[in-house]
Length: 106
Image (cartoon, rainbow, N blue to C red; front, side, top):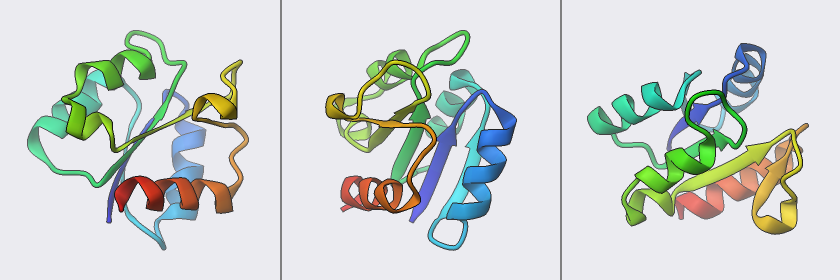
């Protein structure tokens, strides 16, 4: 399964890539505009996106996608977004993260 991770924090990207590379084919980018470029060129089964990013937020990125692709987005946040709103809270629980990614990909 191909996974695109979008987060403006390089340390978060490195950590997620390290722990998820045994489960998924992982690509990472630090900006939403870079994600949009990649999405125009490649197919990803799941897109893991940070809510709070400078420039274009994760919510705005998701809103720019067509409905089919937007349905494959999993949101995460270290801020005020609550898990009951469908956003995974940072620090991420690996088991819950993998469950969420697999559910969206299915």
